[in-house]
Image 1 (cartoon, rainbow, N blue to C red):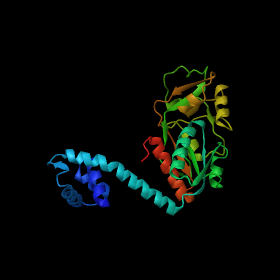
Image 2: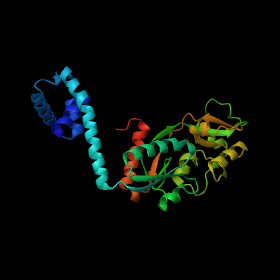
Image 3: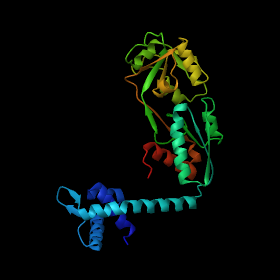
Image 4: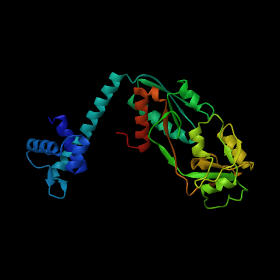
Length: 297
């Protein structure tokens, strides 16, 4: 049987086809990788790689071995991970929530994959509101929240969703028929505000006080919920920068959504309290990332 280092080195080199990158990936020297590969080739009784000064290629025997070993290695890794999970105790209950309907599909994919990996851990799901999203993390009633970044004072995991920014305006607004607009137009129209309880960093990102050139942005009225904020826009009380998903989840005849061509994208993903980074939370975030990629290892 191949030793673990032999298996890892062979499969890594078969993927990278470069000794330097393989060594960096495994955290060993290039000489060590070469030594291990030669040992594997002696076991097999023939070359597995063609080496020249410019390229490294798999031989037919190498391709065959890589194809045979890859699923076995994946199974071994999964078995070790499950054993590690059992020793860490991925059991009990994990409480997760989503903020905004458009984050629910990403959350449900994560919950499904997490449940497959950790059937001993029960997951409860709820919808959070703008008014209680931060409080639910602080009081421990929610362990992980799928929400928009930035989320002040919390750990924000890898982004699961990225979307363009649009400007929500009333259907009869002068900007409603524009192909796109600049963030500079915020200086010319009141901007509907998020609830006072919303974090400072988030409000600064979504409804800034100044445009990129430094012009002051007039503040419009605040809404208690996102739907109420859109209603204020539809009533002509202001405009509101939103994510592209709003056009799909809030298609209203009294609103128009105009692309903001110079605005950075909005990123959404897992958020949790830093001092609540338990094994359950770490494993859920890993499952969320894997599920979002659509390629769980």
